[in-house]
Image 1 (cartoon, one colour):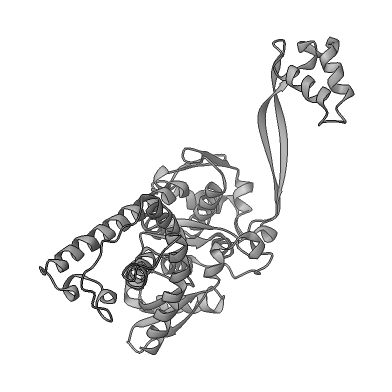
Image 2 (cartoon, one colour; image 1 turned 90 degrees about the vertical axis):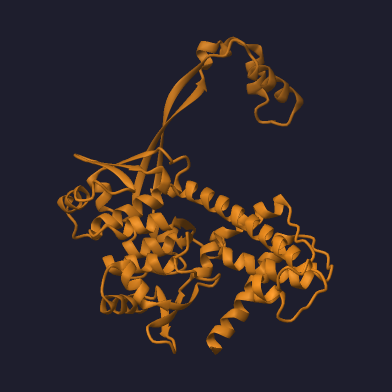
Length: 402
């Protein structure tokens, strides 16, 4: 399984059920100028500001505005403003892509696990071992096959058996749209860590699993949620669930998962969710970048160390280098592979969209086809981004041919 993987918010929302249309009322405290207490109505500058307010670019208006902004007599008071936000998840997540059937516990868990199994940029997964899926889900082979069929019939994935018994090739439907902007049909994605997915796999209750995934998306949609507490009424939680649910279903399901590692729960007249900072999506992204940064740096350093050993005739290329470095080329000397810190940082951020394996494959290709031939490279991250689809397409054909 991947350490980190993106999963589309639309996919999750469809799998657990879109919420009913609703409105949210938010209150915020803002500081506003108290014109009466500040004596504005007796001020000649304020009067001038009112005269020229229809001419905001005029010199008298700008001068009066500057004077007012720096007035030492200004008195501010805190006021509470009410903001109503109308939410329609049908429009937000599914306006261009339609709905899919909601999933039961094992199918939902299987969908999460499949996303962690090294899909390429287009959502292709080759040689997926059904036995491994069975062990991860803690069920039998028949259950895995049955739920693969559910995911296929509900249009979440498509899959075919390979020539090797017990292995399948999978395509995650719409995977490439995860990273598109909204105008092109993208609906956003979340970065899931392997620790978060494993924690979700331990939840047996479908109600709790659905609600937790809803709350994880809500937490990702709001800034500064590392220590944020979400308090939801049972009415709000029932809006996340199919119509046959009752408050007691929610209370019973969540109460049986009080000791879960994802949310600190308080179940009473309402339900309080406090997200474990280790599972905060923003923190997971930061950890993903840091991990990718370190692994790319270590990989390039190891390559250069190996080049030095080969150049000094202390090792053979086929013993310590990937095949691309010696299969069709035989350089008299391997040059050092220099990548600046700025480029490594940009490459690390690309790991949100591409697997680290794809990025390293592209770096290998660039070294063989550009660095050794002294071909100029103006933008290394941009070149990596353009080369990855070509490499993956070639790999796809070779896999299918095999």
